[in-house]
Image (tube, rainbow, N blue to C red; front, side, top):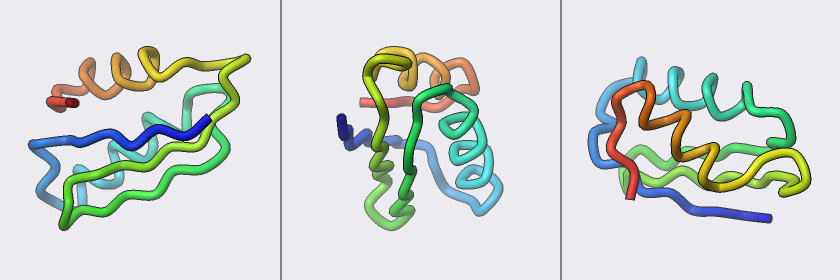
Amino acid sequence: MKSVLKISNMRTFEDINKIRKVISSNQGVVACQINAEKGEVSVVYDDYFVTNDIIVQSLEDLGYAVF
């Protein structure tokens, strides 16, 4: 599966690193590409192991607004 998530409060290089780390820590995530200019994160994952909701929740737990 592939999801494109919009993150409104991703502003710094530190934010990008935190987001990449938390997404990659979910079992089943195959790839993660971040476009800071657009505020978008593209995630490729195996939906047998992880769902879009789990990925979104892990980002929201860090304090990011995902829509």
